Image (cartoon, rainbow, N blue to C red; front, side, top):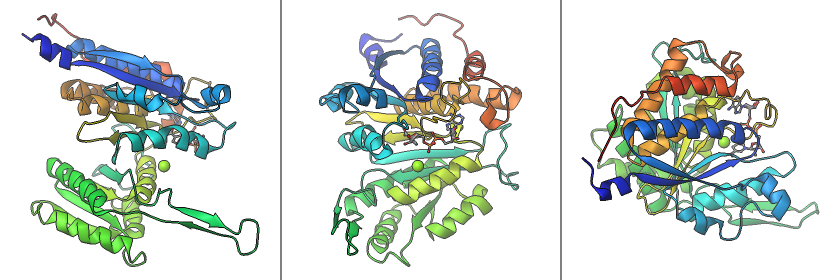
Length: 367
Ligand code: NAI
Ligand code: MG
């Protein structure tokens, strides 16, 4: 039995931004998979699709309309494919859509799992003990700031200054989030630092990290310089559990994370506003892949996995787990895979295999 209020709470209007290139190819299968688990687990989704993309820019001169953020704010979450097209400089598409969304909705956590899935080959040799790293990247300040400028353009004296911004509040909240997450996993937290070379902001980062971790005596916490940590991703990936890093360090470490687990095409990510005051955004780590766009061979797993993270965030944990289980089944028990992970399957063949591995509802769920 479920009352009307509970039913209402399990209805999710979701903003869908497929974007450009393979974003448009991997989005439809992800929506289909979510619709299937929604049916099975008794909740409903309403896709609110927006055409905002580089094509939209070519028509209107902007990546999204002036009231874009307001329109998104009415939805429970945002599912994004990828944006980017060779016809438009990348900083325009990024700063015209993704960064404004992350900032307006205070999505200060960027969560990026790097998990080696069954049946997928890592480029590393020693993976017997598996790879299951969760990178928590600071997503609202740090090195990706707008503070700075350029002077004496075009002269030999020309220079550029870009300030990195670290606040006590910003560091505290990202480290706290990572520590809580570590508690629910293997209770290890590694913080990416560089306080030997970057003596103001990174020593501050370390200080606040230590302060927060006083409250988490049960979590095995360590600080590691980001260069050594990058090497560790390659030499001892199984020793890492949760890794927390600044905006730049997190960005770099997660690309290493994505390749050591087999393919860019499988890596998911979540841009979270953990308090739920604003919608969070879920997107694969990969871009629009113009080199393979239009051929129907993009791996849809990164997009499907991102949608599973969205359901988990919305509280639909069982449905999210069912999606992850289906991905495991297809990769572990079948040889259906797209070319990026050594197969010949198309996007839709791989997506159908995931759909067919989902649990089906056996009895009607009625009020
Ligand atoms: P990319 O991730 O699009 O492609 C890198 C390589 O990985 C390519 O060889 C591509 O074919 C392959 N790849 C990526 N996703 C795949 C998938 N699902 N299945 C199979 N292979 C896959 O990165 P790139 O080439 O640097 O950027 C292309 C465009 O995407 C640029 O305009 C860039 O700005 C944009 N971009 C957008 C992002 C976003 O929307 N969040 C993130 C990264 C890049
Ligand atoms: Mg990146």
